[in-house]
Image 1 (cartoon, rainbow, N blue to C red):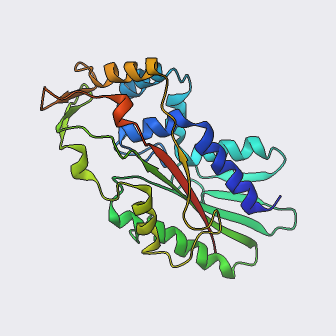
Image 2 (cartoon, rainbow, N blue to C red):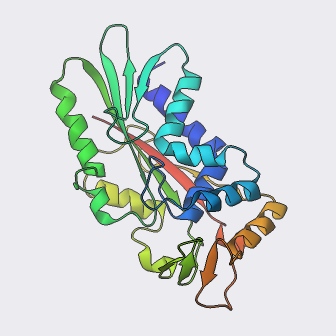
Length: 263
């Protein structure tokens, strides 16, 4: 199997089979690229959400992040292939290394963006989308590297809104209304932000990215999500007490996307 096929097969699996991971990442407003964001909500809030969704391994998935979950899937799907992964930024570079018997290896970098990803992270800020692209292009002169891929995941929850308020006990940090933080709300806009700095078009699936709708949970779980969001002792205290969260409406239209570039 060609290396690009190995990667896109794993990316498809991550999008299709881990709905709860992507919905939770969207609701918690963290990209969970590595699972160690400074914006990570308290463990107690994530554990409550895990119980609501009935996903026994959700906390583990969020701690792994996109990189760690993708690495796990690649390992499961290709048990005889020698690979290394950078689950946490800085420990192993690049994010994915796939070793071949002829010592002509494959390297890949992974990024995850969503509606609140700041513009600087689409460009060159030391660890932005374009920084990963430049790093891979520089490896064209390395005779030991046969393939160089950049994987970018996109996430949208177009109907998800909440007013200003305070989130998560015990610190109860105040924030503005969700829409005030939007940079590129929809996947199409996120993709265009990527293309503003990367001149190449994806090798997979082509143009536009592969997009997978996030099917809504059952009505029972949606009602549990409403109660989770309304928990003023642990989760959220809106400035506007008249506002209430409606999971069936606000999670409608959620989707995750992916594209892979080859350099």
